[in-house]
Length: 439
Image (cartoon, rainbow, N blue to C red):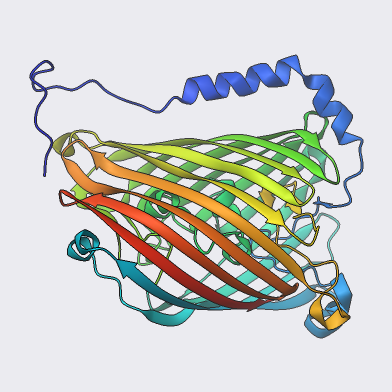
């Protein structure tokens, strides 16, 4: 239902945009005022910071050298190394809904294969660093097979850079860039799933200014090859992200980032929709398809890690040039806190600016308890603006994760969420379980 016109504004409403300039300004001022802080941290120990990069930089699970796993999945063919990996996740879910929620959308108890994938990667024996990756994945929500991250990465150490050519993640959002299996929640925030595709075909520059503890990504993506893929919701994406790490030690890490996208929706149409952090659930928020010629996304990230503790989150806005729909601006994000009860510190890939999987100090096969992690996440998405009423939804989710070893995990979580849509406010309780193995 379209909102009633404002009698004080007449037929026009003021343009509302996300506060990109203040966020960028604060980051620039901070870098100029505190350069000594950034430089002093660079020289400190970085044992738990991953400063290496493969072509498969966002699909890696466990490094092959850890705990002798390389003898099972890693070979050297002379002209290239060759590594095999896999991932498999199975989900279970049941629900409790009030009467209003059942009128909005009906959830039914279910279980199924979340996805499974095969990963191959290696490094050519060339003077200049040159790596390759190939991923093939079955995606249960779309019931389809497609090539995952596939392409070549060339290193240019002269300018502290790498260039990826092929199919990869855009680079927008730490939480979207992380391996989906490695999250401290089951799924990414509904805002990210509504607007940020999981992959794109193009070229991405991954650069760094080591003395200033700055890393960035700049990419261009086009759907020439991926036109028929489910994730190809845009004809073209230009994406940039800058991460500043003013504090970076073995235990402590402060991650600040700003990011933006300039995109052209596929065939002049777009549909913003997402599930409530549960792929077994129907879509909760959904604008339906609407005509639009151009869109922009901006957002910011803040994360702080202190040993076993991690707290932070992201927020973003996506605005559309869609005159028939009132040029809507949608927004959302999430904030989380995670605690590794057994004392581990979650790793971090400094090259691309995202967190890694948890590696237990002592796995259950080494006579230890594995790693136990507790997390609490709050997410929010608002798809009501202009003439579009896609709905508003929030969810709070405590979870417990048992990392039995580097490549096996059990996750359980409870979620309580509210959907404001169809002139109703419905409440749903989510009970979810995931079994995962991956290498």
